[in-house]
Amino acid sequence: MKFKHLAIGLLAVAPLALAHHSFAMFELTKDVAYEGTVMEYRWENPHTHIIVKVDPGAADPATVGTWDIEGGSTNIMGRQGWTRATFKVGDHVKLIAHPMKDGTKGASLFYAQLPDGKRLYHDIARPKTEGATASAKY
Amino acid sequence: MSIVSWCHWLQSTPWATSIRQSDFMFPVIEGSHILALSLSVGLIVLLDLRLLRLVLPSERVSKIMNQVMPWALPGFGIMFVTGLLLFFAQAEKVYTNGYFRVKMLVLILVGINALIYQLKFYPAMAEWDLSESVPRGAQAIAIVSLAFWMIVIACGRLMAYEL
Image 1 (tube, rainbow over the protein chains, first blue to last red):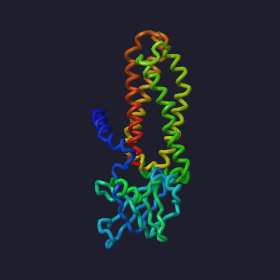
Image 2 (image 1 turned 180 degrees about the vertical axis):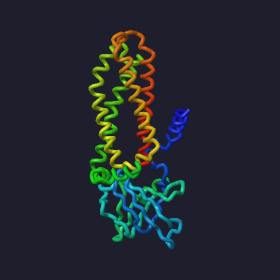
Image 3 (image 1 turned 90 degrees about the horizontal axis):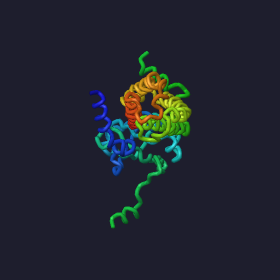
Image 4 (image 1 turned 45 degrees about the horizontal axis):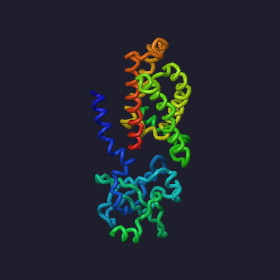
């Protein structure tokens, strides 16, 4: 009986597995800006996590709260220029990320908007260019 | 000290932390853990399928076993060592992961299954080595082995989605 439950359990999770990792959980076409204070900067494998607290009064009221912004492995992010010292607790940051579909306070990191105006991307993904958007219409 | 707090201590040790935060060690360990599957489980599958007379039916079971095991056992050794290192690096999250617990339980069952084969069927293998019929019990062990290894691999992959 227990194995029957296990088998059903395995089948139930299968669609998630096919989407490769948990990206299926994220609304990948949606870019949300989370601007707030770094509570934790976990530079680690298999996923880096930046815990950000967005205070009331934020430009986007829907982002108020504490968010777990998930990045890739240290190797993937290191190749874009991230290091274990990129952020520290207490830093003010603006992160652009794809929110969870189910509304939980988590998101998949897209890039960090740095104070000097530069973008620190999470991986090789870049925003679609104007040209690409235009040609996609036809 | 509870097991969870012991896991927390374990992953906080400098060397566990250095694996978790490394650029190359982690993917190398993780990749080796997965690639060693082909050596260990891949070859065990070959032996199981022979017991079910689905592959190499005209080859002696003992001959296949003697050639496969010198590769399968080191393969399992690589999986065991790399698995331990992956556990150390993320002990707390792994210990509380449901799939991990199912995986460990089924791995123990796989070990018992192999032990039964060694004690009950291995000593008299010469009697049915080349015959048309492999003892029912040995075939049952082969089916259990195939099924349980699939569960172990599935749980190993599924647990990683939650880390």
